[in-house]
Length: 74
Image 1 (cartoon, rainbow, N blue to C red):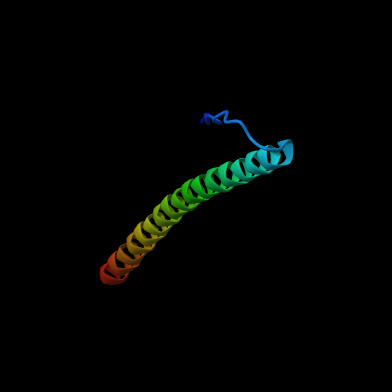
Image 2 (cartoon, rainbow, N blue to C red):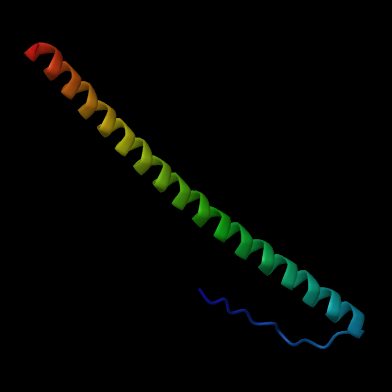
């Protein structure tokens, strides 16, 4: 994933305010990218968790029906 942003070049009174503005922009970009990655990680983990629960449920149901079949045969 690539991230592009444009900094508008406007005349500033001092270089410190420009550097401060640039620092704020970098902080905002880092926060936004971190939050978007966090959202993707949580979504991926929830899909993996739901798949694991589905497999466990299916396995336990198969085992239960197998045990019931063995019990009824005896």
